[in-house]
Image 1: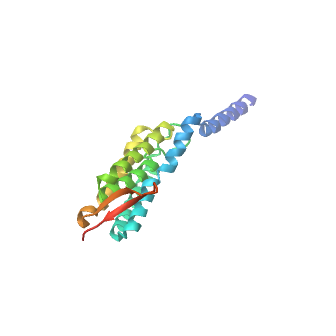
Image 2: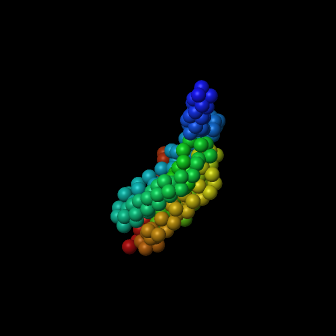
Image 3: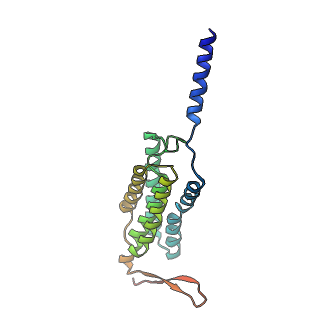
Length: 187
């Protein structure tokens, strides 16, 4: 009887520890992971600021539809698939939410306002995706799936603004070293 109780106790302890165990991550990887956490929301924030600055109400609607679709599909897949993260912290690895949100913002910017602004947004989103893999939160296919969801959502709902209104947005430097945007529109 003692052996049975001891065996059950050891089995319980092993099972409890296996669920709580995570792989150690170095400080450098944690720093990159944190930077990716912060930068994941730069492209959606830039999209919102641009839409409001230009009073692009149609773009606001399209951006909202893009965001809601991206979040909905990503959350649904996370909870349906339940893939374990590389650091073994939980079972919500597939697809990458950070990457899907970042790429949705980048694709919205590119689709709505052109490649001039889209290329830097995509570069930032690529860094976010890389940071998720480097930080051991996702495998590369989690990131690719997240990017595809974000870009796909933006391409479904977003229509070009720049071509419709002959929009020309270009950065300008002020005399005091400050930076700003020059916007010219022809309707």
